[in-house]
Structure formats: C-alpha cells, structure tokens
Image 1 (cartoon, rainbow, N blue to C red):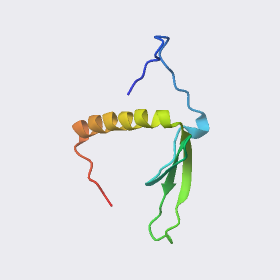
Image 2 (image 1 turned 180 degrees about the horizontal axis):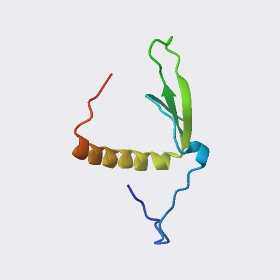
Image 3 (image 1 turned 90 degrees about the vertical axis):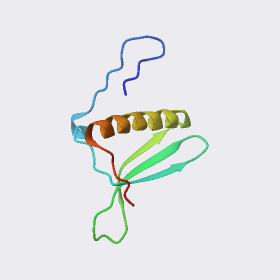
Image 4 (image 1 turned 180 degrees about the vertical axis):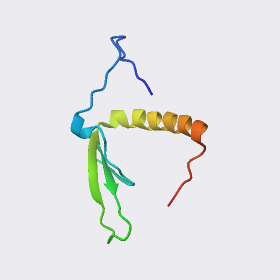
Length: 91
C-alpha cells in the first residue's frame, strides 16, 4: 500500500538502517492497549520450548494508526492471495 501525504506534498520515502534491513522473524503476536496507545509484541516461539516466547520487536502505535494498519494488511493479504493462493489459518 502506498500512501500519499494528505497535503499533496512529495511522496513519502522510507529509509532502513543497515542493522535493521534483514528484519526479525516472528511467529506469534501479542497485542495490548491503553487509552493512548496499542503495543504490538512480535514474538518467536521455538519448537520444544517451555512455552516462553522471546519478543523480537515491540511497536507502540497511536490508536489512530490501528485502522490504517489493518487496512494495509488486508489489502496486502488480498494481493498476496491473488498471486500465491489462499493462506491457511493455523492454530
């Protein structure tokens, strides 16, 4: 999803620091919230572990962003499934 600034300014550009460019793998997500923010803890659960999951990334976002995140994920999932087939629901 490409978003344009509301003021019709120049298109947005994203820069990724070299140490972050490979990202982190997560296979579990914990979502919590307060009146002022949502916290997304992306976790990694390893087979055979005692059930403890390591948080590999924590994002805090304003409630006003949550709808836009859901919309972007939904749009991108639809594009992915049109190209590669439906993603099975696991768990």
